[in-house]
Length: 233
Image (cartoon, rainbow, N blue to C red; front, side):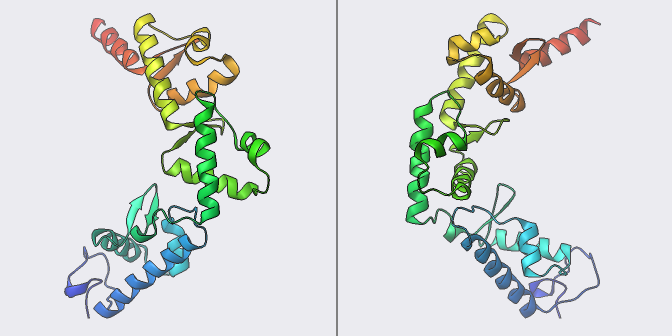
């Protein structure tokens, strides 16, 4: 008998439970099969969450053993840990032709919006004939996980390229003027409060800026100012 591992090695002396090497290898294969089944059920699904793998494999399986199996499979390159879940390398990027077409349409539409955020509803109203809402949302989730688009705090989307350009514009303006107002957003982004607030809130969330009263300042400046004040005191 082996102590929860091939080669008869002790696994951290976590428990007295013993399992044979063959049984452990069989569990690893089953875990891989379960993960593939979960991902195969939806070709837009990029990762399988640990809890759904665990439940599908055997909800009574000891947590520490399940976690060790995940670690071993990642070490062997059989699984990839990504975005809070797990992928199987050979399945990454596998999409049906219809879903691939929808994703390409979404990417093209998103790129044309420039700095203007869009919602799933906007796309569906303009290009959603024959597209089920559930499939549209899955395609947006896929692009989000892939890093092609970002989801703002209000649930709308921007391309990652547009966001990066906005980041640079906002950073440059604040470095020049000391702060950014809603009026400034009209100048650099082309829209006012209604469109700008969710974008600026997102910049706060990612740590670029911080709201002070009715303006935004760079978070780095906030930290520097606090340190200088503390030093003066």
